[in-house]
Length: 506
Image (cartoon, rainbow, N blue to C red; front, side, top):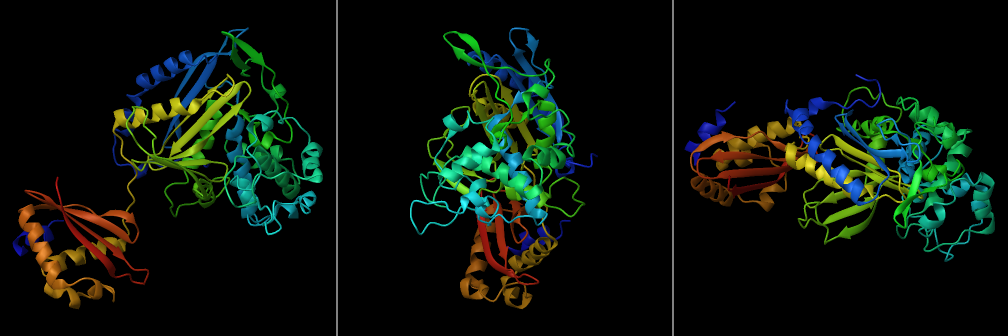
């Protein structure tokens, strides 16, 4: 075995929301993605026609930039106004993540805590009667994650957009009704996010609309995003429709009100892409100056799967391949991981007259968004198909985590030990548990057998970091490859606590 190891041992902007494409090494990355656009355009065209969408706008964001847009149909059927990337659509529940972001910004400013009982900010909630006397009070975090115990309220909540603050608080004065106790399960609640909007007002001294506009929209340059539809230029405003009895029937637009925090925002593809870029720019964690309106760490916190709620064992990819997935609710965001370990972060939106969805894939630096102006337009299926097509046809790879210096150091030291296991105990690179769990004589035999089957060593791959204290590397042989993986302890400096060597086929 040592003759094989001898060879291997000798081998040698914008100030806000600007994503860093330098984390990717493929210089043809954007070109590969651009080549998929004609196919994606046709997917949207066919989907819109099949599902009777009067109009749809969509956009693709790559490495912090809006690189492709499309517009199909009309924002206003009567006046034949075509959809463009600057058309203004009501995005419904996609608004929720901006409300959540505002809450985290206030938290970062020391003005509230996520574990605070909501009654600290809304006194009318102090006397809330829960289903049992041992229930815990509703916290801000419960409201953010749909775990307050309120019933799912989409049909009712969608019609409450324009109610006043007084009408919202009247619900609490009369006594809100619960489907379960707080903290015991997920149930989607528009009331919960309307309540967060009121908390923003109480804490900031501004309406939630003004606080979000001043602290998120304007700093991002989202200057063509609105809360009240009457303020939108008429030639830009998307009218909402319902497909009924073979024709489109226009739906009345609701004015801005207390429930706007759950679903009232009106924006364009061009503007919303800047918000998506902010979410992509939160990755990877790094040391450079944090220039966004909200800390990168808080945005990553928003995206974390706080409340896992569904395992879909029979899920399929857009091409029909079985691919189970698990989904969770984060803070005003939906999170999903599929069988290929693809992670998606975003949200759907639906109101009478409108439907929308956005998703970003932080590991890939790409995202997609689409708006439709028909009641509860199901934008998620077409967005998923478009993302799947983009990944499949472009062949782009996910971001690679740079290995820490200690991983590289332990790799070099471990290679010497693998070449001669008799030096293992004297090497000083193993934790105190190692020789109780592993036996050098057996490790020597296993390594000799693996390298004999792999054949002459051709090369050693770079370490692939799974995190900063765990990784693996591949030793390529003429007949097969050897995978060496190891995990370090939390000590300083960290020695090796776990080790595996496996023969793998090329």
